[in-house]
Image (cartoon, rainbow, N blue to C red; front, side):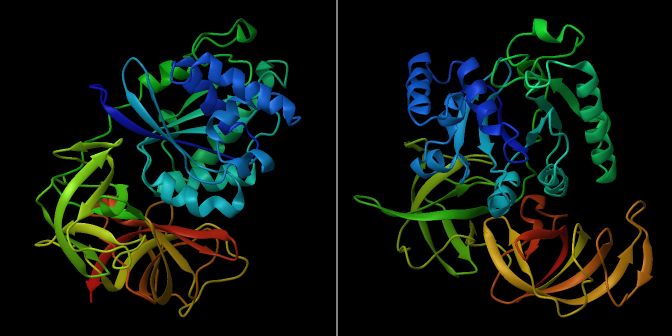
Length: 421
């Protein structure tokens, strides 16, 4: 483990805008992937007629992804800069994978938004920026990629920059905090060293911008909350749930409870990066083993917390939502799927309590009949099966969610209060 502060970094943006290539390039430039591995990938890429994909191959190491040329799951990769030790949460851009994007982005402290210079703001660019903001990502670095494709044109860079700035204003991202860097992930321009091809640009390289990110605030003294991502059976150990600690700490000997499955026991071992540790804290990805808890007792979407302060399970909850896109209107009784931390549960919007003025947050209308795209509102929600969720004022890490229906993200929001069952 590194003694530098740790950051989880999401790489977001539209499909084919070069996210995987950028990640491969970052790993290569920081010495996290040796030259011979890249060389191997280059030969393999060329043999499949995909020359130029060698950096992307570093990330997309699932065979299926190589065949399809798209990124499917969230891969975790690590690299060090002068200031930080980063874990990359590579978020897929494909629409079918926005679900992963939601559970992925909620784990990131800051994000790099990749926008291709030859394409500009695309539909998923919008969606990802919106989600990033709703899910509490602090700062955005905008990498205007594929500058080599537009002959390093300053005018094109400026057009794309303005387009992205307008998008950030629309979703009320503090756009003055956003850093723009013109890059070519493929050629390596402005990643580790300033490029002669963009003599008109005198700002930071991408690695300098990453070094300049603010340190993530240590989470409050909230109790342990660890959403379960997967549950494995490992021979010699038994059942091993894995996930990322959002708040609090976990140590062997702790008595824990999993909600809403309502089982628990004593933590026997905690592992990080395949090594046993005495304690793990916020931001750590861990696998752990709990005495008496079997593989069929718990599942993805459960949240682990202290037995004496277990995660809350909602009968209903009040939330503030922003509707991003919906073909018609949303009324009481609508039941889409809510994605909160690692859980996906169908929930009914029982009541639309208030419509808010999106710019000021003031109440614009009490008990409106419906809400539509662009509206912000306070709603009462009833999960169709048990869901562990927390008020965002108390544990923000478990208080945000996205709402999906018809293969797209309809809305995103945060929990105001939980009426426990």
